[in-house]
Image (tube, rainbow, N blue to C red; front, side, top):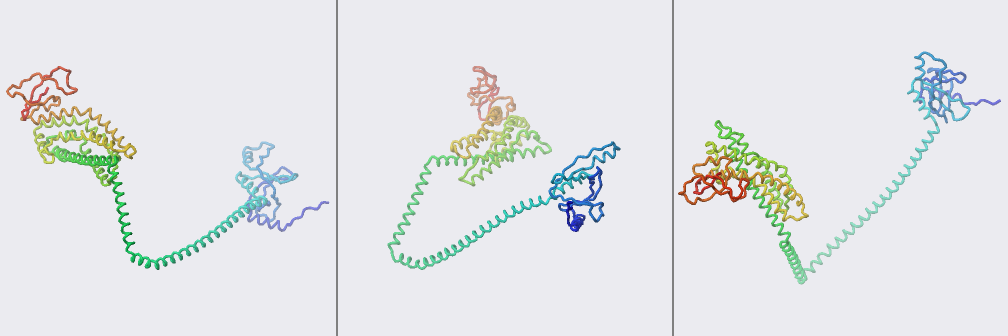
Length: 511
């Protein structure tokens, strides 16, 4: 008869007690009986790789135990039910979680377990999976290999650190040795210096030779430097740079004069007329002031900023970079465009306002200001019309003396193209304004004034000296103007014109 397997029951009971207190997983599970297909609820406790089960949670002695070494755990489907019970009982059975513990050899019946909640069943399966001592040994082996590798790295680093330490010590020793040699050499030089100086002082020929050599070296250096400077002064590049600098200096002077003219326009005409428009009996309305001086103050502020930038560039002479200043000016060109479009209308408004005697008298007082230097308001209103062409000419001259590889070349060409586009637009709108300005100038020359010339529909034709003052001034047919004008007729056509006598004895015609 085969004897039963013996085991240390006392130690097993001790492990069961530890499992009740410190088990990895503890709780109630239903265990399927081996003889009949019945489920019995037991209290299970997992400790390391041994699974104990008790009759109840307060039981002191285990009812059995399972060794989980070499076992696996997997989910099991719910067993089929023989009869159809109530709906509530059927739903409760469907919610239960079944899993099976498979032992690692044939002939051993698996351990079938179930629990009430799915989460609890997953935790039991995970705990049983991790209870294998063989898996722990494998993990321990992996960690041991990592530890050995790290120890080897540390040992290698220690050896390298010792080698570096020895090298540093050797270098410190070498440095100390070199320092001592330098000190010894310096002492030797100090001892030898009086002897050498005495020897040189005693030999007058050596002194003379040194003086001659020093003089010749200085003379050769000065001669070489003078030759280099003269060659550069006579070079085409230097001549081009001189012309370029002269253009810049002229542009700064012209810009300063232009800012001064705008300052007179704003401070001697615009602002006083604004104050007059706010008086009790205004000779001019605020709308007329705005129409005559549209954007004048803004243009003055813009060119004051541009002028300050030019002066700042001159402070860095001979380095002159101007392209970025034109980059600042280009976005503001629409202000000039509005000024040009409004220029003809502003002169028309001014002509209408001058028919008011009070305004005309006040305007003559403003024009008598010494700062105006005898110039009329129309002259100051015309100055901005010529500023864009002046910039185009200046940039064209700068480009003529700017090398193709210069950093400012592309920026200046771009600024020139933008200004030329604006100049074309302005040129189409200038002819009418010139006609009005000439009519206003002629009206000023007439002794008693001429209201007809203040009519903006009048067109200037010709001005000249009167040949025969005794001839009565009667309307007659005047020849068409020789100049090319959009208002001129075809060749041979005449216009009905009336002569007007001027203060200087000349005569002009209107038609």
